Amino acid sequence: MKIKNIKVAKVEAPLITPFKTALRTVHRIHNIAVYVDTDEGQIGIGEAAPTAVITGETLGSITHAIENYIKPAIMGLDIEEIAQIMERLDKSIYHNTSAKAAVDMAIYDLFAQHFQAPLYKLLGGYRKELTTDITISVNELEEMVRDSVAAKARGFHILKVKVGKDPIGDVKRVVAIRQAVGPDISIRVDANQGWTPKQAVRIIGALEDAGTNIELVEQPVHYNDLAGMQYVTANTLTNILADESVFSAKDAFTIIEKRAADLINIKLMKTGGIHQAHQICQIAEANGISCMIGCMLETKISVSAAAHFAASQKNITMVDLDGPGLCLKDPISGGPIFENERITMTDAVGIGFTI
Image 1 (tube, rainbow, N blue to C red):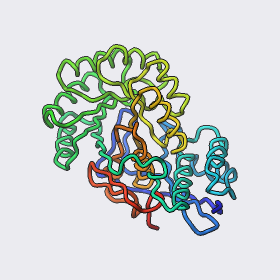
Image 2 (cartoon, rainbow, N blue to C red):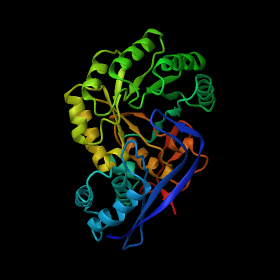
Image 3 (cartoon, helix red, strand yellow):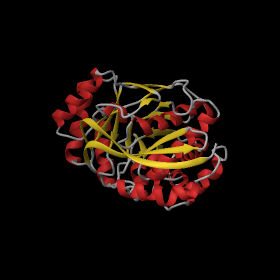
């Protein structure tokens, strides 16, 4: 089974409500879908999310990278030679991790199709079901409380609360949400690099003193401020999750070595796909660091690939794959089954899409 062609197309999906973080506001997903054809007629599917404020990529740059650098590097290779494909993919162009991720997941889709198995089983097959959180966008306090209560009513038991735009009001927001949803709902706080190290310690300390019992705080300070991450991790009781600070296996090693976080968030759009994500997960597991699997603003296409990876790995203990739950409709049929907080893998081969 050899790679015959690689095609790109736009994929769009309206959001149920605007997605707001400390970095951006989005009303509709505009991503790139990738289709890898083989000489035997199979098709592998992937997706790239242009997140300029995080990966530096746009719709145009992703398309250009795939068509002019990635495609020529891997055309004609045999899907069975997946290690060689991934090596060439990685070396085809510097950075451009979302473009690489889309092609990576399409190749893994074909790899599992070739062996007539669900992808998660080929990657490790640790579990068949996942429980995801749901994101509560940063807004005025009253709106965030309403969104949190509505998420609880939909059956979600884990909330990922976005903060970071208003340090003074962030404590009030989280306290109000805790009071509204009660003690049985898990709350994860994501500052999206929005605080300084001293602000982060003060805010997290206030949340601890207020009895909010938050599970973790994600990326409290700028991704490149590892000294700041060290300071926050050392001076708070709450677990600190590194997100934007970790793109590669080398980044993960540095974070662990410097004790700059307690946990690591793996996102395929940052790692360049499943191949590099697996390396990060192994490094973390070897050092006793648990991982979260996360996503950008992605549709069911790429979130499904991330779900297969998460289901395969014991060390992925937290799941933030709410992308399909934020969309009004799915752009594709098949794949894992997304039912509010529950994600269930199926026995369909590959990632499981029907075209």
